[in-house]
Length: 350
Image (tube, rainbow, N blue to C red; front, side, top):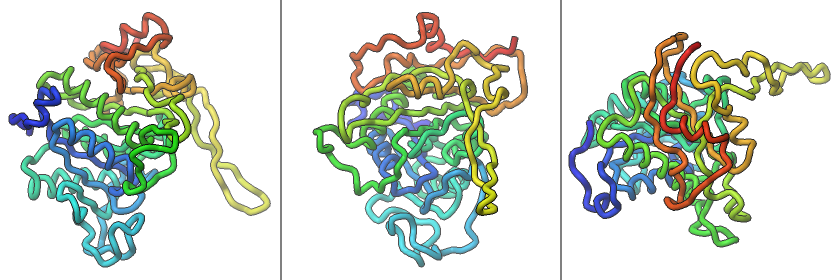
């Protein structure tokens, strides 16, 4: 349900519409990234609720798993919630921040079918945001196993627009470790990551102009680079670049160690991951974007996995305009033809 009331603070900030937003992740409800993004989105005037796991639930994909115990059997991540607490509960300092002892996709279901209609002032959010994850979620292989992305397609399957974010800063930290400034006088990487994500989201909201943020059945997955603000400003304001999920990608292989009798995984490229069968084949792959410098990859995906020859236009925001500095100009992307494709992604099979 879209809120028709404009918050006074949002009006002062120039926000045209205040959205009801559900936020989740797979790293846990107490992690720095989700808490910082919650702050940024709330400051923009949006009505945000977090419903996320009480423990790290990485690499579970879209698996739905409900707890069989009404109470936590062990402490939650970083001891924020102790053993014996209810398996579903709130942060003691914020009634908009909830945890549940289940997988990321389950968080979305619990939020949509219980928490929001029971405790919020809306039933159905206008947008679901998952992440930002600590560590990249690149390519089709990680798309299938990422809990961050799994939460988004759980929402999209319910008809709700969803966006997943992942960060190149891959060491999870709790929200209470976030510093106002680093030793070099810059904002914490978690804060910058959140500002970048919020800037992108707000640009999409403004572009929608009161309509859905994304068409039904569509989602976006965004990978941000490693933010360097702990040591320098080398990468603190990366541009967003439209990309393809496949491309120069790798997948896992099972490697047998004869000395231990155990298996481990090793990444390797395979030709199938470089094939383009749908979408705009002129776009760079996510890996190419992330390894070409300080840039963020933006991939639009759909839950319709069938091959189709229908042409669909996703009216995505102008990515070159989404930065921390609204007046910043970036050049040297992927050629002049790329700028045309940032306005409208055509999904077509030839």
